[in-house]
Structure formats: C-alpha cells, structure tokens
Length: 212
Length: 212
DNA sequence: CAATGTGAACTTCTTCACAGCG
DNA sequence: CGCTGTGAAGAAGTTCACATTG
Image (cartoon, rainbow over all chains, first blue to last red; front, side, top):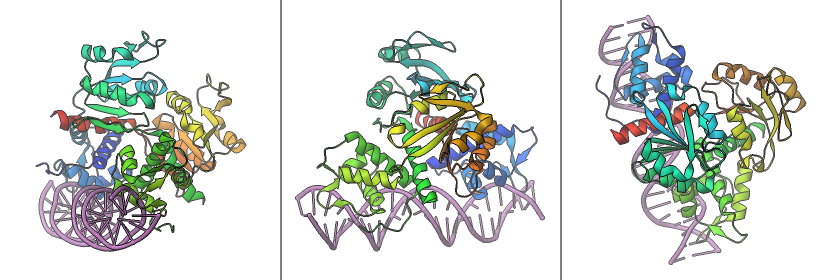
C-alpha cells in the first residue's frame, strides 16, 4: 500500500489520464474489475507499463483478479488532482477558446471556467453560458475579482508572452498554451503547450516516410 | 554531409518542427547565421540537443560560425515533408474544425484543406473560404472526388473510430485525432492524438504538486 | 577563438520475467 | 491458475566533453 517515492514521468502522468478516461468510459458496475492488459489496450500501451505506472502510487490491484474499477478510478482522480475544482480563466474567446469552452467533459472533470477575456470590443459584454466576456485590458481586475489557478491562453503568438506575464503576476499557476510560442515563466508555474504546427508537421514527417 | 542512418525519435521530430518555427519567426536575411545555443533557447531545449537532432540529417553547420538560416530552414522544411502540399480532409466542422481552419500558418505551411465534412444537415452546403461543406454520409464519394493524404478528425468520441475506418478505407494515410478515443488503424497509417483532457489533467497533476 | 559534430557517459524510460499472492 | 508488483535487464534519449575546423 505504501506509495513508491519515485516521481512519475510526464508521460506516466499522461498515461494515468488515459487510464482514467478508459475507466470512465466503461463506467463499470461496482463489483467489476479490470486487468492491466485490458487497460493497456484502451490506452495504447502494454500491461507491464500499466502496472508500473500504477505501482508508483501504491498497490491497489489484486493478484489473480485485476483492479477494482471504482476504487481505481477514484484513486486516479485523486492522484491527478481532480478531487477538487480548479478555476480556469479563458484568455482569448476566439474559435479555440469557444471549442474548449464547449468541450463536454470540461466542467464534469472539475475545471470551471470562471473568467473569459478577449481583446475584441465586439465580444466584450457577451455571455457564454452565464460568464460575461470581459476586456483583456481588465485582466488584473478580473483575476482579482475571481481568482483562477489555471489559464487557457488562446491568443495570437505575438501577444502571448505579455499575457502570460500578466497572468502569472495575477496569481495563475498553470497555463495551457495554444500560441505557437515558447513561454518564459518563473519556477513554480506549469505550462503545457498545444502546438498545431508541431502536430501537423510530425504527421507530415511520418507521411514522407510512409509514402516515400 | 552524409545523413546519419539513425531514425529520429518522435520527440526529435517535434523539436525539428520547433526549430523551424523559430527560424521562420526570425525570418532572417540571407547571410545571417544562428548558433545551436540560440536555437535551443527558442525551442526550449539545450544546445547539445539541437546539434544532435540536426546531425541526424547531416552536418550543415559551420564550426565557429553556426548554422546559416535560410539553408537550414529549407532543409528542415524538406526533412519534415513540407516541400510539397498535403491535401487535408476536415471531418467535423464544429468549433475545433473551425479553429483549425482559421489557423493562419495552415495553408502557408503546405496543408491544404480540400474537403470539409459534417454530419449536421444545417451546415452542409455552406462554404468555408471556397470549400463547400458536404455531408458526412458522403465521405467515400467526397474523398474519391478529391483525395486527401491527411484527415483532421474532430468528431464526437463515439463515432470517431467508425469515421477513422472509413477515412482509412478511402485512402487517408495520416489522422490528426481530436476525439478522446484510441483509434485502431492498420500499419502504415499515422495517428497523432490531441487530447484536451490529458493536457488539462497533467496541469492539474502539476498544480497538486505545486500547491500541495 | 567560437561553435559544430560526435563518441562516450549518464540518465531515464520501457520491457522482461518471475516470485508472490489471492 | 491468473494476474499483480517489482527488481533486473535492456533500450532509448539526453548530456557531457572534447577533438576539430573555419
């Protein structure tokens, strides 16, 4: 039961998230169990990898049986920090922002968008599902009114660093960055980049190999 | 000059894409050079890593000087398969699809959206920048009319696998998948997943560590 | 002298294989 | 007997350090 002391790698954390997705999808009855092999298939990895990943946080499987679905699911939620609600500021209410806002599992998983900011005056004042879009010039005031731990940064590349600086100064501790720019942030602030060009270009590379 | 025979890792390819982005941003004059150290800073890695990555494809730097920007940029484009145009089918004209469609560097980098499909009859017949949205039921006919090497799959999870199967049967060789589902595809088809839940949950995990 | 290219060292991640347990 | 948990082995990726070259 003792959690191993090794810190999980970034990729291990991402796999944990995939395991959780798989468990939530099967939405199993209380008594059901799942084996590392099945979980591995859902997440696109190997059974040994699943067991290693889970063993970093203790041993909650049963030899001969597998893992009980509901306890494992709850434990993964807890490990991933999903037992609580995170307040999210959406910076940039363009298409990407809108897409994320509508992402179904968003609120369900504990991410609550409390603030929406945009630089376009035409958008300011509109409401998205009860949240009024405020001007990006008001960033500091908005985050002081309703603090947020996480920001989703969906603004053009050239202004991304400036907005990131303001967000960090306003207390944001994690940024999901869609701008194709390397953000410089102080220690203690987490950044995840989602870079469409990288995704497409790595496919392009793979195609070159596949098609010759 | 001889390209090393080692295949680059997936992460190396992704870094190459970042180097290219950096080079395109500085948009340097013909004579300028850049050192591995500077390139590393733009891409968030180390100078040694940059040199190793580039050396996989030959040695186009000059000792004491660095890398000439325009040739390096052209070589990276070539390596990444961006010297040619890839035809892209956008499956799912929702918010994510719209966001990608508007992504500025999309066409500029050689990705040309030739087909847009959606299941919603209200959207069918509309035109996005000259491309008429066709019904998802017509997928096979649409891809036969205008073949595509790449598909962007931005449909709900439950139908993603079915659409992926149809796309592969219709000749698509690479899929950028936004559905939170593990796609099963035959050998010779490349898949890249962009999974928002994973991105958010790994931030959540990091926050838990940062905030205690 | 500055900065590349690269073997070698090192570190991290993954897979293996099997003891242990229900 | 089935399947987990985990050291050990192996593979892969990254960093180091330095010879090399313009």
